[in-house]
Length: 120
Image (cartoon, rainbow, N blue to C red; front, side, top):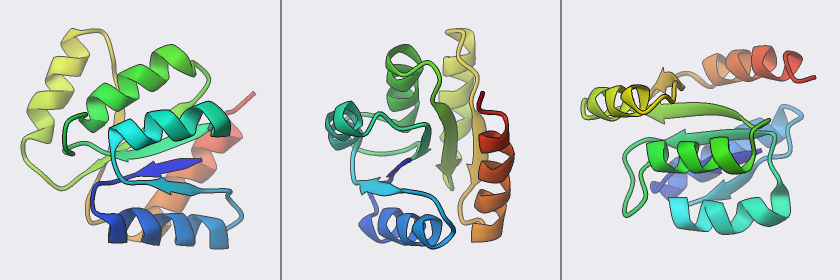
């Protein structure tokens, strides 16, 4: 699993929580570093913030959809601009689930539990 957020404390905290709950999670701090890490990790799940630096979480999710088609994707965001980015993605044919930030870690674990149970 790859957790991406340009706020390093959030990425690290989520990775720690996930690792403590039986997942093998790695943190990345930008879309670009996530792309680099993904080649060696080949993640089953991507959890990414939407609003980041040069590469948004939407752009990263689209990249993962094309490159790792079996990878489950969950977007996290606490910013209003996310709605416009999600609408843009939907018009382009991409639909992603969104978990608002901040969320209790239990909500993330609950989503991931249902997502991993769907993995063939």
